[in-house]
Image 1 (tube, rainbow over the protein chains, first blue to last red):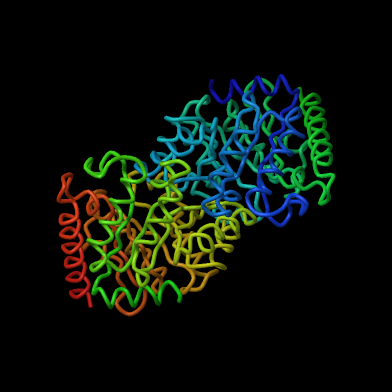
Image 2: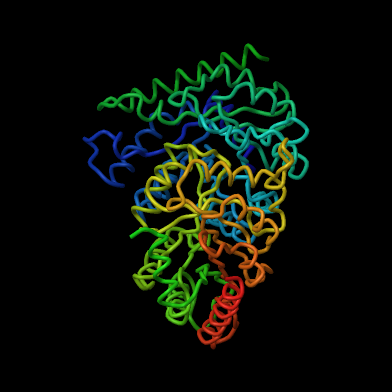
Length: 271
Length: 271
């Protein structure tokens, strides 16, 4: 099933448009779970169980698995197995390389790890995005959520518009809506509004809700297009580490329910 | 030992400035070696043995290991163990993510996999490059070797200069020469010449020699700065798969020796 269709069904069955990032941070996993990748697996399994009634998508970021060394990839595979089959998975990998190499990354993410979607970086060029689009659904970095995002994304091109707008415009012209959407940081609602005008029918994954300072209602109002392009706000640390203590499951469930309700209120008002 | 120092010593001891990319492609590994990651390990071990007297650096691209699935990371670790200790390793990963996540990637590459250097993508911003520079030597993508490189790297900024020049200028201003150099495709000698003027004291890794069409002598002449910034031409497929048959070791040795001699001739003429 295509990513967008699976996502739409999960949004309906959970009445939620919220995505949760699964990013295990060794220092923040409750000590009672032990240490190393085993502790991370126990932690993530319980986080998934506590949140899966309230999310439409999970987004593991590969960096946090690779940090465990060779055991990290097994941790990722086992974590993916704990996710209910009807919830789609975005592998947040931000890969990007020349076409021959991009094809190998695409195979790793979509064929080996069975991702429903993957994040991809645009710097190498659109010929390097193509091998991903051929194999699965791509979320292309447009505007990232970090404070330094502007260093290169805001460079003004000769027509007075920033680089990130040009990227989106070119990607929209080249790849169909059922194959490619964009990553637009929830921390930059003004930029999201501008991008929505350029890409009315695209899905926007909006990371940075919570710990990074993005407000879910503001992000949704800036990027929702009631009739076409969807919006997928994503939180990681503010859910996973909502409590530092042994009540982490309950705290994560509470955090994600609150996010879901805020998101639903924002989209209802908008429509 | 720092990457640049280790590289300089390997260049001297091998009388070579050539880097070889270790990119296992299942379809191109001689059938007599069997299949799967075991065959790739046998193949790469013999390629390293056949070439290690004539190279100053190896550059495994992570995509080609990740394509093997979870076994791929073990394949990478075992491949790294076959490389002589005095030859530095660039992990070609092209990672790039927001700072908190970039720190996890940097730990994966430099701490877990003990890379001497790693390639990093600039799109997310310079705050996202910082965690890599803090932990090891970074080769930042400036101009990639693919035909579509210009899609975004050539966008003209308001001052009339392309995006990739701005990236290099900003990175030079922010990070010291012993922490950061650039990836400049050997397929774009004119661009390399312009970048050398902006970054006279930086190391340029120049992939794309051979199969991708880059001429090693042209690349070196365009990018060598006799007294400061070095140049590191890199070939992968044209060495690894120089022969499709059972004489692949001899063919790889011949290909890399020829490359070394061409490179040495070009740098001698230059100086």
